[in-house]
Image (cartoon, rainbow, N blue to C red; front, top):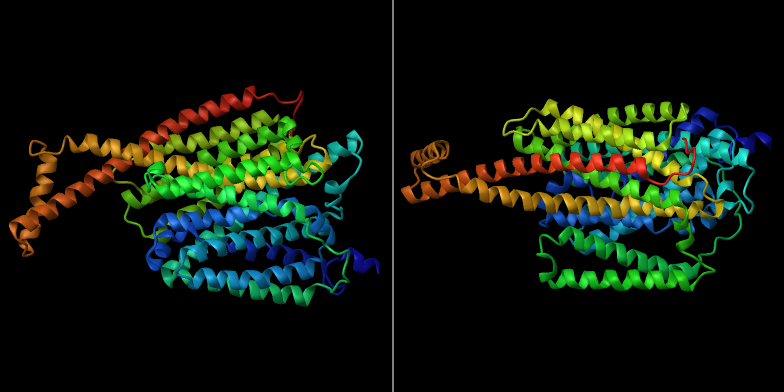
Length: 544
């Protein structure tokens, strides 16, 4: 009986190393179930005959779905049975992945992505709260359910363990996420983008078989009753986040508030967000998001760090974009640039653990991470030209992900310091809410709109220099015209071809100059963030 308890949730005959391996493998199928894959955005939008913004929104809907479940987390984890949870969630993810593969309807795709995100976070929570006690022997759920706060020395020990655990956990999840990008890009290049979903379905079936073969059946615990008072809050939060994502993704394309759709989405956002805040203060006995959690400075400071990290990380998208413009690469090679992110994550993990081990101040850790991210942008600033080298994209990718992992993981641990146990589940919700939904949407919107504005500015400026007196432009125009005429085109048709070609060259040059301009300004903004993290009001003697 004792051996069975120590080997929970596995059968007594399953060796412990095998159990650890199985639990680690359980992270892979939900992480690969991304709903819509941005690394395949060109193939998916082309195959479905939709805009790239539709696929981008679908990807954000997956993240939004992940934000909606955490307030139910504690009651669910108390009542769940790991084996049954895995099987039911995998059973739901299989048809959702199939729908994403075969549908040609954008609303259906968005709905499937939203549900995928919701189920995905359930599996991830089940994975985390199964492997942690299996590895450490500690009841990790207990820190969310304690009615009385532990003594100061016990609290300090728990915080130290969390600070060491977070970089390792984030490293593992980011590694799987980057592997997912590589695999889906490879499937899209070698076969078709739909095959990536079928591969994930195969993973889910294999994972289900592993669960059935290795995990023991368990008698039903207490019944998990849905806290229905929180459901309206969840729906309002979902409506607010989805409408916000719609406005930020489509705003520039639809000319912002000149579009009836943007005005309607904005109205939905304001109404649902307002109703959510009203209900949060009205139903004080059943909080979905207790406002009191924001009275703890570590919480709002960590939220600020998350949004800064994700906004500045959006500049990293220029690395792949520039590589596709300036070097002759295909989509798979562009996605494979991100394989260096794994090296960056590993360096970030080592640096994080070393700084935690040396009990460095959090402000020092955050400033170091921002400086590393800024160094990636400084390097890229001097790489922008009309002819680039693919291998020069390696270093900025490594540096960016090194800083990102440090910020991600240790900002999460920082937010939990000195936080009462009753608010830990709320903090997990806020962390996922900010890091997975709000910050990426805001960051992507800022940089895409910023790039569009600056590119248009430089197209106008460069176009003013393109005339017959510009020898380079005139030579390019004349040569293209002659090539067209040699191919059998008439004079007018050849001139039109030469004009289009010259316009394309100007547009590409404007895009590169705009990227360089924005990257330079991003370095200055990150420098401001470094100063900010030093002047934030930390608690006295705040160390990792």
